[in-house]
Structure formats: structure tokens, C-alpha cells
Image (cartoon, rainbow, N blue to C red):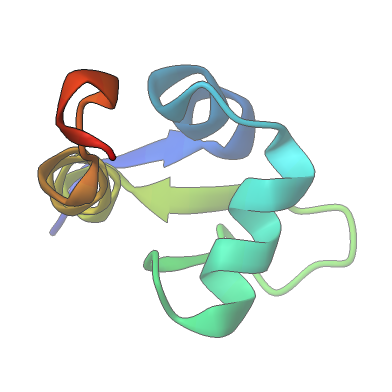
Length: 68
């Protein structure tokens, strides 16, 4: 089973707001799910999907010295 982390931990790893993490999960850019089917269950994110997303994001970033 894949290692999971909390929404807050994923947000900290990516340097973004936790609501943005939820949006990325909703869009399918990150893998995430509720821990259980109860209403108050915490939402968790697949740690490897966060690392993959961060690698993809970093590889698309153009350094300012190369712009223009």
C-alpha cells in the first residue's frame, strides 16, 4: 500500500495552501482519498504523487535568467 500524508503535510512539501492541494486532488493531478468513509475522516494524499508532481513542476520552471 502506498504511503499517505495529510493535506497539510502535502501543502508544506509543495509550498502551497492546503486548499490548493485539495483542488489538485479534485483535478486528478494528485492522488488522494478519505481515510475512511465517515464524514469526519481526514483526507490523505499519496506521498509519491506529491513528489512526482513537485518534480514535474520543477522541470517546467524556467529560471529568470533565461526569460526574455
